[in-house]
Image (cartoon, rainbow, N blue to C red):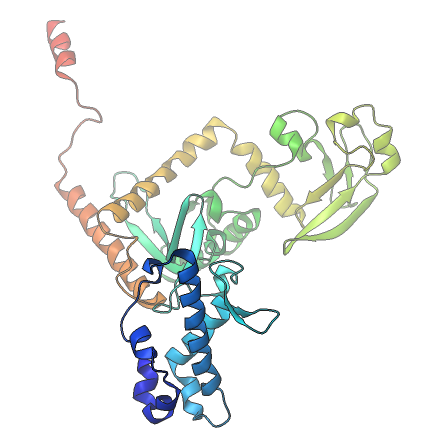
Length: 381
């Protein structure tokens, strides 16, 4: 309303209703209206009708065309699309937080249209997501070498390739990159090695079949895969009868099926499948290389040696904690993705300065300070 009052006061004046000055002349906390939920719904739908009046007038053929190009008018239009709908009787209804468009298609605040709502495990927030990469060389301070800021709905797995490409441009590529499970897939491992000669280390998704979870029966790893002949052989020696492409949730796989007669006659069928009538089927990654990477990494990450090697990744959790607690990483001081990214870069810079200063001033000391009692025992001996 403020933007329209400045851009086209003569056009807006006839649309203003007597109550609008009271309703919209000051900020109102809709959740504090007297009358409970019914009063909140009534006010929200009244606001929806008022906003629809403005939108209908702005898109009328007689309206000045430049009004539809005003940023605040476009934001109003999108908010109304997100939060209101027409019912079967032609009445405008408020969604009340239900049946909203997906988070990646709507913004969460009209004051910052780049901010999106997101939930990750037990944490829910509106805003952005930051990805930090730090060095982990022995005898040197751990420094943040790369910062990426994205919309909150961008998943971690979508950023691995971008981070590697950015590090390559800055000539900061590591020989080994240790990442969280959310950043790694067999395809990422293959690309990192092929494009950047990076060993990408992290836990790939384990086999979620009931056989693998139970630790008994025949999991996918028990089958021999012949990629040249496009066949799989089960532990009992039966050979698959079907090999075809499969697409699940936008990802490509190879589906392998065994003959129904072979599976029904198998003496150890209960260790292979829980189905009473259907044969065993496998979903393989689309290429031999990716399949072998998946199988090899699943075996490796179960070993003590791999876990000891991967333990160093815990350092980045300390970095995130330090930036959250000391430098306010989770509180955006700006609006918009670009400005928030600048804040994240400055936050990482502050962290680096503090760490370098601590490293330069640190006095050499043993890993563990001896207690007074232990010192007395040593002196007595």
